[in-house]
Length: 317
Image 1 (cartoon, rainbow, N blue to C red):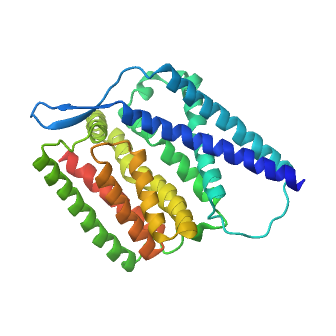
Image 2 (tube, rainbow, N blue to C red):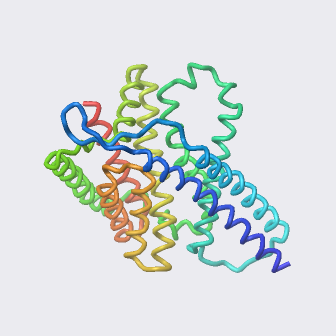
Image 3 (tube, rainbow, N blue to C red):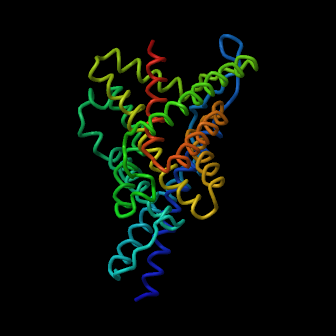
């Protein structure tokens, strides 16, 4: 029974790794499709080629997603059949990191399959084409993280920084101090980009900005959806994944520096933004530093939330 349970764990972890690999493959594919050219003002601009994805990439993705889902569910089902009482232990392990990310991937990819294989046809056209609803679709991975991570770590929430207080004057001081540093980093990025003749208004930033303006043109109620997606859902879901789970696990196993740098690197990578890769990486370091100082994920969520909210408001002014 013990051996079969061990095999089930390995199968589930393998499935989780395949789902994570499928998501990272999509990020890498986006980076590969980027080209560099001059914009109308003569500045260097990174563009994303909207051409067709090579067939072999689609087959690899399909294999990783379908194989990952099947392996993950089979491993989970077999593990449940041989379930035994276990002593309380820390969940800040690489195995638990992969399994928690696997549940996020299962919900994310399962939701995508369900939507494109039939659910979208049941929705009215005006709803499918609504820019506010489209913005929510853009943060579906973060929504999955918000649903999965607190549930998976429900008996170990302090280990991922979800401990009180949610708000305090001390946390406010830290958040405002780090918000100043993040804003200074943003100004420095713009200045360096202008000096080098590089347009730092990347395709990703332009897409988010377009969503906000399109939603605002359709009415205030619709406008609140992309603002909520960008300023609340994205920060909450990303901090659960990258600081709460990833940094906490790496920090426990390899030390604080590895935790901060590793989570910041993957945080920057998944944004698939070639122009802002370094600034986002540095911002991730600031987020990780704040988490290490306060031991509170709430502080980082507030910082991330305020940064995104201010950026959205300034874009609309």
